[in-house]
Image (cartoon, rainbow, N blue to C red):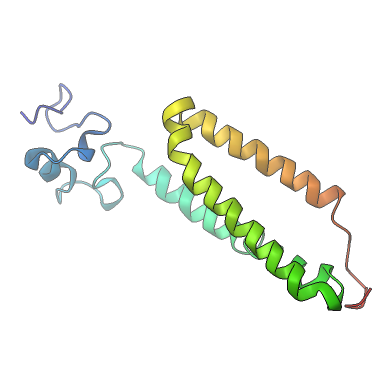
Amino acid sequence: DCGFCASGGNQLLPGACLLSNSTVKHVCEGDSRPWFTRGCPSQYGWLAVLGLALYIIFFAPGMGTLPWVINSEIYPLRYRGICGGLAATANWVSNLIVAQTFLTMTVTIGTSMTFLVFGVISVIALFFVLIIMPETKGLSLEQ
């Protein structure tokens, strides 16, 4: 018995693979487990892989490139360099804030609430883009 197994013997308790017990690691990384659950004692490991794939598929053509496209079009030529630099800095600082607060928030308010907070921020950002951002279609770079 590994000490971290549920009553079934080979079924690990959630979080057990985070510990450095050699027996637990052997069960977590064993060849008998599907590749998407190795290291993760959940039967929903495939859901995490699917979620990550969908995130990448939808993020890359949309919000992954949108800030950079807008920055290249929205500012007048004489201010484009400095404004693009400021916008890029704001983008990276925002990424840093998310990276630095995510784990603390998951411990403090839980995973679901953390994703809810970031989801609400994303919806607010979407409305900002839809309502506030000017349309640049059909305008010259200087306009």
